[in-house]
Every structure is written in structure tokens, then in C-alpha cells.
Image 1 (cartoon, one colour):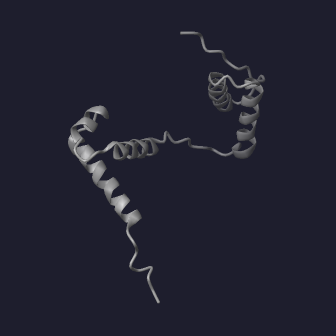
Image 2: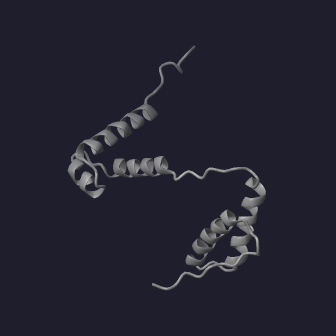
Image 3: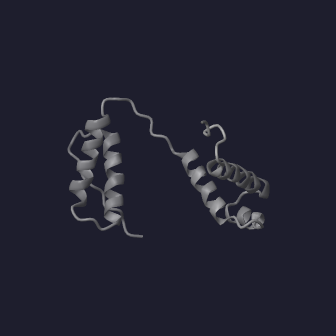
Length: 120
């Protein structure tokens, strides 16, 4: 595995911003984008000037990841593949059934015509 190239930041640059800049630099580099270092620094500076000076909590996004997974399971659901989906996603069949039930309810609600909306 090739060693990851690190971007250099000015002396005394805030540590958290440098970490963010390194992540941006890494992602841009992987895509082979030109001017990676200057773009990464420009984006890091934009973050610093837009939200700097405020204590920020950066969520892990676990609920977002789970909802993405659940939507993927719903798209792959064929009506009789609970066990296969459970194996694929390392879940119990009951968990898959609950995910499908919630997704089906959301789908029906989204498609259902609202009787309350009809007023003359």
C-alpha cells in the first residue's frame, strides 16, 4: 500500500482545521483533481471563515447511514427475500422485516391521497 501524501499547512494553523484539510486533500488526490493542495486549503479556509470561532459538534451520521441502508434494503426487497437480505446486511430476519414494514408504511403514506386535502 503506497504511503499517503500529507499536505503541509502554515505554522500554527489550528489542528482541527488541519485535520479537515488533510481529509479534503486526500479525497481530492484520490480523484486525481488538479491543484489539489490549493483547492484543499481554499476549502479549509472557507470552513474556517464560515463556521470558525464557534464550538462545533460534527456528528458521525449514524442515523443517516442507517436510513441509507434501510432504503437500499427496501429497493432490493422482492417480497420473499427476507433471509437473503438478513444475510447480506448481517441483520436478523426480524430486523429486516421491521425495516421493510417501516419502508412500506412510508411508501403507502407518500402515495396515499389525502382525504383532508379535498375541500370544496
